[in-house]
Image (cartoon, rainbow, N blue to C red; front, side, top):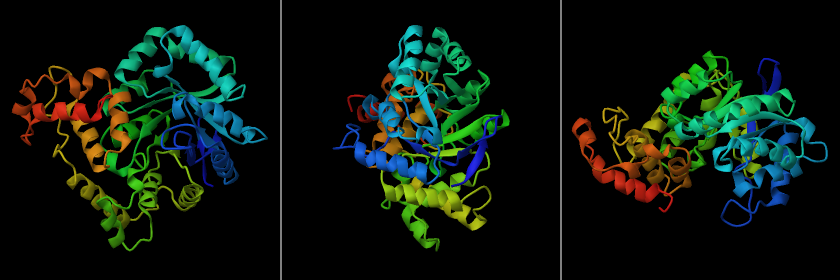
Length: 379
């Protein structure tokens, strides 16, 4: 495994982390976790040198943290850094924020959580965390030795993301980043900004919830024509590890085959190791995906501001990925849990102001109700 210094103390963490949100399960949902298969997977990851484990109180219907604590018994806890989070979905008051940290220590069967994040920070949840003084509680827990490095994760756009970077003396952040999403959410500009401010950057969704690992999407022919014997997943991971700003890439691996492949690619990849021709192939793959979208939004944002607050470009991005992925859950999750309520398509009143400004002549007032119907909680 390849390692990089993480933080001012120079702790060395593996460039590949195990995301404990997509572990093997019994059945079709998120629970129950298949403990036998998942323990074998987690411990094999550690044996292969993976020493960054990422969980959260909401993963696997609230069972991921307890599973991780159990799986690390027998000497594995000392080999890894555990990252978990304070999720807005789990807390509604300052006292519940305080209690959550203690509950997480018990569930993880540890006296110290190495890395602690505010989870999925949106404009709405940031106001809540600020009002209840969540960061004050986190810093006090750090002073007691219960928590280590402090960070945040977010799927918000670059402008708000940069405000978050500047809002606290963070140690690290976690962003969605892959070649298909390089210009949305925090994107390249947010990645570079966070590093310029001294934050370590952890990447989530390197395969876009598994979409970029599939062999039936438009990029596949581009990869076949390249002459490289790389899977779609390997192309995406190599492209991310080519960036020098990135410290850790989290992958939600749920088979030993995926784990073995990702560990191999981690060893063979690194900043500057993709040549110009390889980068051109990635650009062509992105173009193939972009051309296959359902709504031809260029992301110019001329439609904004919407008088009702709808984040129109974001809605089109989520919808396009939802359709391209054949109803993949990523779009619904981003809509319902990672987008501020005031920015969702359901707030559209079909006033038509945006349509007057749209250079693509998109029928926004017709599309927003459809998007809300498809992606909303009842979709």
